[in-house]
Length: 180
Image (cartoon, rainbow, N blue to C red; front, side, top):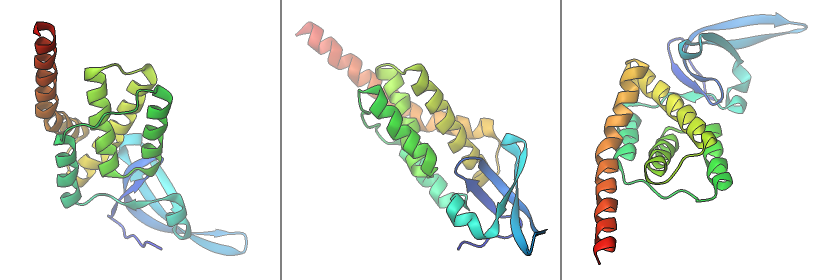
């Protein structure tokens, strides 16, 4: 079982990112239980997680600065093609959201962003993209001690060069096809 201390930066897969601000002991019926108290400023809430259930809940340490660098590199990588079937595509994205793993979230942000630029995003695709990017940006901001706007700008900058180059290649291919 993972142990945390006051001040640790953590990620709750369903609630988001936060910082442990205390460990409380509460007397309930015949037993005392200990809880991590987590401040989650992005959601304006405080969450209490039973210490003995952190693994079951999926609470994990926030990404390290090294992992943050890998996330940015992942965002810069060439996007992968997503399933054309929107149901299959959205199911894969939902699975990634439930896992709340930073590299996988970066891949989803990158790939869905490209899908939106090269083809079409459904309303649900757009909502899922916003949800994953917000979650990723929150963790990036927590790790780098910046704000959400700066983390979102880092995401956009990381993807911009690759996305623009891919669009240019697609335009040239289209021109060659039309001219040939």
